[in-house]
Length: 319
Image (tube, rainbow, N blue to C red; front, side):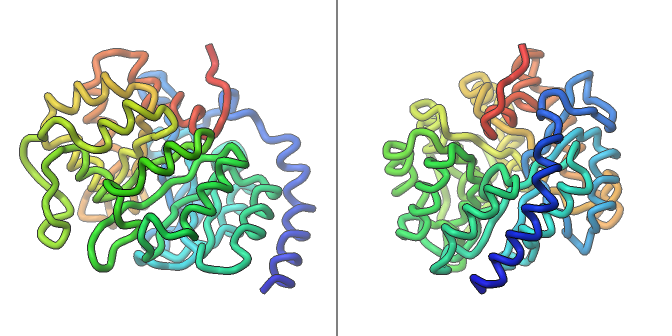
Protein backbone atom coordinates (compact mmCIF):
# COMPACT_ATOMS: atom_id res chain seq x y z
CA UNK A 1 0.00 0.00 0.00
CA UNK A 2 2.88 2.38 0.70
CA UNK A 3 4.16 1.83 -2.87
CA UNK A 4 0.67 2.62 -4.19
CA UNK A 5 0.53 5.70 -1.97
CA UNK A 6 3.86 6.92 -3.35
CA UNK A 7 2.65 6.34 -6.89
CA UNK A 8 -0.63 8.16 -6.21
CA UNK A 9 1.27 10.98 -4.54
CA UNK A 10 3.59 11.39 -7.55
CA UNK A 11 0.67 11.38 -9.97
CA UNK A 12 -1.27 13.99 -8.03
CA UNK A 13 1.73 16.20 -7.30
CA UNK A 14 2.33 16.66 -10.99
CA UNK A 15 -1.30 17.48 -11.69
CA UNK A 16 -1.93 19.54 -8.61
CA UNK A 17 1.16 21.75 -8.43
CA UNK A 18 -0.03 23.92 -11.28
CA UNK A 19 -3.57 23.89 -9.96
CA UNK A 20 -2.56 24.99 -6.46
CA UNK A 21 -0.32 27.70 -7.88
CA UNK A 22 -3.18 29.25 -9.83
CA UNK A 23 -6.16 28.42 -7.61
CA UNK A 24 -8.01 31.57 -6.55
CA UNK A 25 -7.98 32.62 -2.92
CA UNK A 26 -11.24 31.53 -1.34
CA UNK A 27 -12.38 35.06 -0.59
CA UNK A 28 -11.85 36.17 -4.20
CA UNK A 29 -13.27 33.20 -6.09
CA UNK A 30 -15.43 33.70 -9.11
CA UNK A 31 -18.88 32.74 -7.86
CA UNK A 32 -20.98 30.94 -10.44
CA UNK A 33 -23.86 30.17 -8.11
CA UNK A 34 -26.55 32.68 -7.25
CA UNK A 35 -25.75 34.40 -3.92
CA UNK A 36 -27.97 34.08 -0.87
CA UNK A 37 -29.11 37.65 -0.12
CA UNK A 38 -25.83 38.86 -1.68
CA UNK A 39 -23.76 36.69 0.68
CA UNK A 40 -21.68 34.04 -1.11
CA UNK A 41 -22.52 30.70 0.50
CA UNK A 42 -19.90 28.17 1.59
CA UNK A 43 -21.23 24.73 2.52
CA UNK A 44 -18.92 23.21 5.14
CA UNK A 45 -20.19 19.64 4.70
CA UNK A 46 -20.80 17.99 1.34
CA UNK A 47 -20.03 14.55 -0.07
CA UNK A 48 -19.85 13.83 -3.78
CA UNK A 49 -21.40 10.40 -4.04
CA UNK A 50 -24.47 10.45 -1.80
CA UNK A 51 -26.99 8.16 -3.53
CA UNK A 52 -24.42 7.64 -6.34
CA UNK A 53 -24.38 11.36 -7.11
CA UNK A 54 -21.58 12.24 -9.55
CA UNK A 55 -19.19 15.16 -9.34
CA UNK A 56 -21.20 17.00 -11.97
CA UNK A 57 -24.45 16.23 -10.13
CA UNK A 58 -22.85 17.69 -7.00
CA UNK A 59 -21.88 20.89 -8.82
CA UNK A 60 -25.47 21.12 -10.12
CA UNK A 61 -26.71 20.74 -6.55
CA UNK A 62 -24.42 23.59 -5.50
CA UNK A 63 -25.72 25.76 -8.35
CA UNK A 64 -29.33 25.02 -7.45
CA UNK A 65 -28.80 25.90 -3.78
CA UNK A 66 -26.76 29.07 -4.39
CA UNK A 67 -23.58 27.49 -3.02
CA UNK A 68 -20.42 29.15 -4.23
CA UNK A 69 -17.99 26.69 -2.60
CA UNK A 70 -18.10 23.57 -0.46
CA UNK A 71 -15.86 21.62 1.85
CA UNK A 72 -16.00 18.25 0.09
CA UNK A 73 -15.40 15.52 2.66
CA UNK A 74 -14.28 11.99 1.81
CA UNK A 75 -15.12 8.88 3.84
CA UNK A 76 -12.47 6.33 2.95
CA UNK A 77 -13.56 3.56 5.31
CA UNK A 78 -17.17 3.48 4.18
CA UNK A 79 -18.25 3.30 7.82
CA UNK A 80 -21.59 5.02 8.06
CA UNK A 81 -22.69 3.92 4.59
CA UNK A 82 -20.78 6.27 2.27
CA UNK A 83 -17.47 5.38 0.60
CA UNK A 84 -15.58 8.29 -0.97
CA UNK A 85 -11.83 8.35 -1.59
CA UNK A 86 -9.65 11.36 -0.95
CA UNK A 87 -8.23 10.93 -4.46
CA UNK A 88 -11.73 11.37 -5.88
CA UNK A 89 -12.13 14.61 -3.96
CA UNK A 90 -8.76 15.83 -5.30
CA UNK A 91 -9.85 14.97 -8.85
CA UNK A 92 -13.02 17.00 -8.26
CA UNK A 93 -10.90 19.90 -6.99
CA UNK A 94 -8.69 19.70 -10.06
CA UNK A 95 -11.77 19.86 -12.30
CA UNK A 96 -13.61 22.54 -10.25
CA UNK A 97 -10.92 24.41 -8.35
CA UNK A 98 -13.14 27.49 -7.94
CA UNK A 99 -15.90 25.45 -6.27
CA UNK A 100 -14.33 22.58 -4.28
CA UNK A 101 -12.39 22.99 -1.02
CA UNK A 102 -10.85 19.53 -0.68
CA UNK A 103 -10.58 17.70 2.63
CA UNK A 104 -8.96 14.31 3.11
CA UNK A 105 -9.67 11.31 5.31
CA UNK A 106 -8.20 7.88 5.72
CA UNK A 107 -8.55 5.01 8.16
CA UNK A 108 -6.83 6.23 11.32
CA UNK A 109 -6.28 2.65 12.42
CA UNK A 110 -3.68 2.21 9.66
CA UNK A 111 -0.02 2.32 10.62
CA UNK A 112 0.75 4.72 7.75
CA UNK A 113 -2.07 7.19 8.43
CA UNK A 114 0.21 10.14 9.23
CA UNK A 115 2.25 9.64 6.06
CA UNK A 116 -0.92 9.47 3.99
CA UNK A 117 -2.35 12.64 5.53
CA UNK A 118 0.94 14.49 4.96
CA UNK A 119 0.84 13.43 1.31
CA UNK A 120 -2.70 14.75 0.97
CA UNK A 121 -1.53 18.01 2.55
CA UNK A 122 1.11 18.34 -0.18
CA UNK A 123 -1.55 17.63 -2.79
CA UNK A 124 -3.70 20.59 -1.77
CA UNK A 125 -6.13 19.31 0.86
CA UNK A 126 -7.26 21.86 3.44
CA UNK A 127 -8.27 19.71 6.39
CA UNK A 128 -9.34 16.28 7.64
CA UNK A 129 -12.89 15.12 7.55
CA UNK A 130 -15.21 13.54 7.87
CA UNK A 131 -13.48 11.73 10.76
CA UNK A 132 -15.74 8.73 11.26
CA UNK A 133 -14.51 5.41 12.60
CA UNK A 134 -15.94 3.12 15.26
CA UNK A 135 -13.52 4.30 17.94
CA UNK A 136 -13.88 6.08 21.28
CA UNK A 137 -12.82 9.71 21.27
CA UNK A 138 -10.02 9.08 23.77
CA UNK A 139 -8.36 6.48 21.54
CA UNK A 140 -4.68 7.37 20.98
CA UNK A 141 -5.19 7.02 17.21
CA UNK A 142 -7.80 9.80 17.29
CA UNK A 143 -5.44 12.00 19.26
CA UNK A 144 -2.54 11.56 16.85
CA UNK A 145 -4.49 12.97 13.93
CA UNK A 146 -5.80 15.86 16.03
CA UNK A 147 -2.16 16.51 16.95
CA UNK A 148 -1.22 16.40 13.26
CA UNK A 149 -3.95 18.91 12.42
CA UNK A 150 -2.58 21.14 15.17
CA UNK A 151 0.88 20.90 13.59
CA UNK A 152 -0.47 21.62 10.10
CA UNK A 153 -2.76 24.44 11.34
CA UNK A 154 -5.73 22.55 9.90
CA UNK A 155 -9.39 21.96 10.72
CA UNK A 156 -10.83 18.51 11.37
CA UNK A 157 -14.53 17.68 11.04
CA UNK A 158 -15.47 15.00 13.56
CA UNK A 159 -18.66 12.93 13.53
CA UNK A 160 -19.72 12.51 17.17
CA UNK A 161 -22.18 9.69 17.75
CA UNK A 162 -22.39 7.90 21.08
CA UNK A 163 -23.81 4.42 21.45
CA UNK A 164 -22.71 0.86 20.81
CA UNK A 165 -22.16 1.33 17.06
CA UNK A 166 -21.24 4.98 17.24
CA UNK A 167 -18.25 7.06 16.21
CA UNK A 168 -15.81 9.04 18.36
CA UNK A 169 -17.84 8.23 21.45
CA UNK A 170 -17.37 10.22 24.64
CA UNK A 171 -17.57 13.88 23.62
CA UNK A 172 -18.71 15.03 27.07
CA UNK A 173 -15.88 13.19 28.82
CA UNK A 174 -12.94 13.67 26.46
CA UNK A 175 -13.27 16.60 24.03
CA UNK A 176 -12.12 19.31 26.42
CA UNK A 177 -8.79 17.58 27.01
CA UNK A 178 -7.94 17.96 23.33
CA UNK A 179 -9.06 21.58 23.29
CA UNK A 180 -6.83 22.37 26.26
CA UNK A 181 -3.83 20.60 24.73
CA UNK A 182 -4.10 21.62 21.07
CA UNK A 183 -4.74 25.31 20.40
CA UNK A 184 -4.19 25.69 16.64
CA UNK A 185 -6.40 22.91 15.27
CA UNK A 186 -9.97 23.94 14.50
CA UNK A 187 -12.19 21.09 15.69
CA UNK A 188 -15.50 21.14 13.81
CA UNK A 189 -18.23 19.24 15.66
CA UNK A 190 -20.88 17.40 13.65
CA UNK A 191 -23.66 14.83 13.97
CA UNK A 192 -26.08 13.47 16.52
CA UNK A 193 -24.19 13.49 19.81
CA UNK A 194 -22.57 16.84 19.09
CA UNK A 195 -25.97 18.46 18.63
CA UNK A 196 -27.65 16.54 21.44
CA UNK A 197 -25.20 18.32 23.75
CA UNK A 198 -26.61 21.72 22.84
CA UNK A 199 -28.77 20.92 25.89
CA UNK A 200 -27.72 20.03 29.42
CA UNK A 201 -30.40 17.33 29.31
CA UNK A 202 -29.14 14.59 26.96
CA UNK A 203 -31.04 11.32 26.61
CA UNK A 204 -29.41 7.92 26.54
CA UNK A 205 -28.25 7.44 22.92
CA UNK A 206 -29.89 4.02 22.88
CA UNK A 207 -33.23 5.78 23.36
CA UNK A 208 -32.78 8.82 21.11
CA UNK A 209 -30.06 10.50 19.09
CA UNK A 210 -32.45 13.25 18.00
CA UNK A 211 -33.88 14.75 21.22
CA UNK A 212 -36.91 16.99 20.92
CA UNK A 213 -38.44 19.74 22.99
CA UNK A 214 -37.04 22.73 24.88
CA UNK A 215 -33.29 23.01 25.33
CA UNK A 216 -31.95 23.13 28.88
CA UNK A 217 -29.23 25.74 29.37
CA UNK A 218 -25.74 24.59 30.28
CA UNK A 219 -25.10 22.16 27.43
CA UNK A 220 -21.56 20.87 26.94
CA UNK A 221 -21.00 22.36 23.50
CA UNK A 222 -22.32 25.76 24.59
CA UNK A 223 -19.78 25.81 27.44
CA UNK A 224 -16.89 24.51 25.36
CA UNK A 225 -17.48 26.94 22.50
CA UNK A 226 -17.46 29.77 25.02
CA UNK A 227 -14.12 28.68 26.46
CA UNK A 228 -12.36 27.53 23.26
CA UNK A 229 -12.54 29.75 20.15
CA UNK A 230 -11.01 26.98 18.00
CA UNK A 231 -14.15 24.83 18.47
CA UNK A 232 -16.67 25.16 15.64
CA UNK A 233 -20.16 23.80 15.08
CA UNK A 234 -21.22 22.27 11.74
CA UNK A 235 -24.95 22.93 11.36
CA UNK A 236 -25.52 20.27 8.70
CA UNK A 237 -27.85 17.31 8.28
CA UNK A 238 -30.95 16.34 10.20
CA UNK A 239 -29.05 16.42 13.48
CA UNK A 240 -28.11 20.07 13.07
CA UNK A 241 -31.52 21.21 11.91
CA UNK A 242 -33.30 19.24 14.63
CA UNK A 243 -31.15 20.80 17.36
CA UNK A 244 -31.46 24.35 16.05
CA UNK A 245 -35.20 24.22 15.36
CA UNK A 246 -36.33 22.42 18.54
CA UNK A 247 -36.15 25.61 20.64
CA UNK A 248 -35.85 28.72 18.49
CA UNK A 249 -35.61 31.13 21.40
CA UNK A 250 -32.63 29.22 22.80
CA UNK A 251 -31.07 28.95 19.34
CA UNK A 252 -31.15 32.71 18.81
CA UNK A 253 -29.19 33.16 22.04
CA UNK A 254 -26.82 30.32 21.12
CA UNK A 255 -26.04 32.01 17.81
CA UNK A 256 -25.53 35.37 19.52
CA UNK A 257 -23.01 33.75 21.88
CA UNK A 258 -21.03 32.04 19.12
CA UNK A 259 -21.32 34.17 15.96
CA UNK A 260 -17.79 33.34 14.76
CA UNK A 261 -17.87 29.59 15.43
CA UNK A 262 -20.95 28.31 13.61
CA UNK A 263 -20.68 27.01 10.07
CA UNK A 264 -23.45 26.59 7.53
CA UNK A 265 -23.41 23.04 6.19
CA UNK A 266 -25.87 20.77 4.47
CA UNK A 267 -24.62 17.15 4.24
CA UNK A 268 -27.40 17.02 1.66
CA UNK A 269 -27.72 13.94 -0.56
CA UNK A 270 -30.23 15.31 -3.06
CA UNK A 271 -29.27 15.82 -6.71
CA UNK A 272 -31.19 18.93 -7.67
CA UNK A 273 -31.63 21.22 -4.66
CA UNK A 274 -35.30 20.20 -4.58
CA UNK A 275 -34.98 16.86 -2.78
CA UNK A 276 -36.21 14.90 -5.77
CA UNK A 277 -34.37 11.74 -4.71
CA UNK A 278 -34.54 12.44 -0.96
CA UNK A 279 -38.14 12.49 0.27
CA UNK A 280 -38.66 15.95 -1.21
CA UNK A 281 -36.14 17.39 1.24
CA UNK A 282 -33.08 19.56 0.54
CA UNK A 283 -31.11 20.11 3.74
CA UNK A 284 -29.34 23.12 2.27
CA UNK A 285 -32.46 25.07 1.34
CA UNK A 286 -34.18 24.06 4.58
CA UNK A 287 -31.36 25.43 6.72
CA UNK A 288 -30.87 28.55 4.60
CA UNK A 289 -34.54 29.46 5.03
CA UNK A 290 -34.40 28.84 8.77
CA UNK A 291 -31.27 30.94 9.30
CA UNK A 292 -32.51 33.84 7.18
CA UNK A 293 -35.64 33.90 9.31
CA UNK A 294 -34.11 33.79 12.79
CA UNK A 295 -30.74 35.54 12.36
CA UNK A 296 -31.50 39.24 12.37
CA UNK A 297 -27.97 40.66 12.32
CA UNK A 298 -26.49 40.78 8.78
CA UNK A 299 -22.93 40.45 10.06
CA UNK A 300 -23.76 37.32 12.01
CA UNK A 301 -25.54 35.81 9.02
CA UNK A 302 -22.51 36.51 6.82
CA UNK A 303 -20.27 34.87 9.41
CA UNK A 304 -22.36 31.70 9.41
CA UNK A 305 -22.87 31.48 5.66
CA UNK A 306 -19.37 32.46 4.55
CA UNK A 307 -16.75 34.06 6.78
CA UNK A 308 -16.51 31.38 9.46
CA UNK A 309 -15.70 28.80 6.80
CA UNK A 310 -12.74 30.93 5.75
CA UNK A 311 -11.63 31.18 9.36
CA UNK A 312 -11.91 27.40 9.77
CA UNK A 313 -9.51 26.74 6.89
CA UNK A 314 -7.14 29.47 8.00
CA UNK A 315 -7.98 32.11 5.40
CA UNK A 316 -8.10 35.83 6.03
CA UNK A 317 -11.63 37.19 6.05
CA UNK A 318 -12.05 40.14 3.66
CA UNK A 319 -12.84 43.44 5.35
